[in-house]
Every structure is written in C-alpha cells, then in structure tokens.
Length: 342
Image (tube, rainbow, N blue to C red; front, side):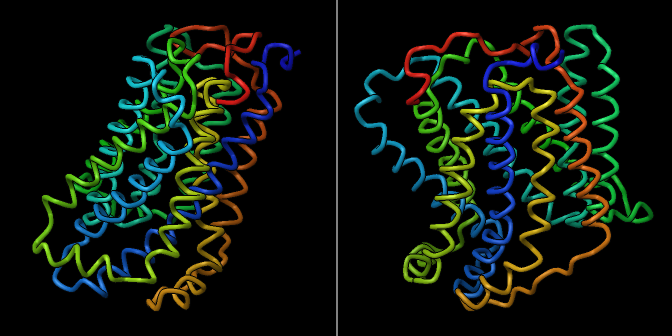
C-alpha cells in the first residue's frame, strides 16, 4: 500500500542519494591527503588557508566545468534557479567553514556525531511547522540512525563538553539542515539541475576563497601551491566524484524524496567514509608522498554502520511518503519541460 503513496522515481532517487553519499565518503580521505600535502609543501600557512584553497579549487573548477557544459542554457537562467543555487552554495559553504573550524577544537568523532543531528532537526522542523508528530516508523528509523552514529563515531562521553568546537559543529549542522530544506521547497521543484548546480558551485567557491584570502600569510603561498604537481590527482578526484557527480545527484534526486527521509539517507555518508578509510589512505599517501595511514576495520564500523543501513532499510520498506505539508511535497505525477535532460 505504501508504494502507491511514494513520489514518482522514488527508488531511483533513493539510489541516487545513496551514490552521492558514497562519493562524499571518498572526499574525506582525498581532502585530508590534499591538506597534508599543502601543509607539507607550504610551510608557515595555517590549516585554514589550505582548506580555503582546496575548497576554492574544488568548487571553482567544478563551477567552470558546469558553465562550459551549460553554456547554451545559461541565457535562460531563471531567478528561482539563481536563488536556489545561491542559497545552496552560501549555506553549504558557510556550513563547511564552521565544520572545519570546529574540528580544530573538538575530536573528529565528536564532530562526526554532532554533524548528523540534521536527521533530527529536519523532521523536528516539519513536525513543528505542520503540528504533526512524526510517524512511528520515522521515530524507529531515526533512533536506529542515532544509535549507529554513536557507535560508529566512538564518542567518549566522559570527554564531551559544549565548547567552541562543539558549538560551531552544531551551528554548521543548522546550515546543512537549511540546505536540505531548500532542496525540498516546492517552489524550486521545476528548477533545472544544471543551472542550480552551476550557481551553487560558483557561490561555494567564493565562500572558500574569502576564507583563503583572509587566512593567507603570504602571496608567495599561492605560487608555491600552483607548483605542486601531485595535487592535481586529488583535485581531479574531488572535482569529478565528490562535487560534480555527488552534488548533481543531490540536487537532482532529493526533490523526489521527503526531506525527513532524505536526512536519514544522508547519514550513510559517515559509513562510506569509514569504509574508504580502511584502504584508501595508504594508496593516496603513496600517490602524493604524504604520511597517511589506513584505519582498521572495527566492530564499531560493523555494528554502527549496520544499524544505520538497517534503519534506512526500515524507512524504505515501511515508511510511506507523508501527506504533503510544509514543503514535504511529493513530486508531481507529470514531468516538467527539460525533466529528462536537466
């Protein structure tokens, strides 16, 4: 019965978001290897500078490629497409900035746990706006995801405190929550993915560029960075898989899935990250000449990751699409112009 209530293309959209999470999981070891490479080759610069630099390159190159791919259609860029792209880029970019700064003041496990709180914030937002308590299957699935994240992140509650790092990480989660809700907004449903992604990538690159410029100690650092040949292997991975493919999948697929359900699917990202961290770091370290060791396969990954996967499976099998409200709107049954090619 629940299948009849699902939006069109629901299965394909779910697979698309899961693939996006897989590619984002690849971005963590690739980004860390690139950060280590920059810090090694550009002594004297802060981690803020190298993070800003790689973010500018990653999203800037992706934006340029999207402009090339969408050149003929750019003249028809609409105000709604520009607005959605700017909102996604600004909220996503600022969220990543706060997340990175928070990592300097809190353990990575704590950051990983707090970042996933959007799986609570999104359904909570809709429950408050619609004045409707979450369905039992949503509560069960969300509880399973939270339990899985706690186990996967191996958070030490005896060391937990609400300091600057924890506060900034929670703040970043609020920005990511807004990003999810922007994709869910019904007024943006007919927007073309190519147009939205192009504006999003360029605006995100500008956010990182500001961080890079403000944290730069010497203009010579940019010259040194330009001469690092090994960086282009990692940038190619980040641009191709973690940006062009992942974010276009997100922008294309999430509008066919209720935001509360999408928030749970996005928790597959730390599972993907943990899987890649088992074998990829040593490969990247050999490729670019940095010291970056693999992580070990642990019971926390098997149990925590298994819980997250099981919770998402529960949502897919028994969680039907809710009655349209507060932006949590099923996709129309008819395709809009350009729906196949956008």
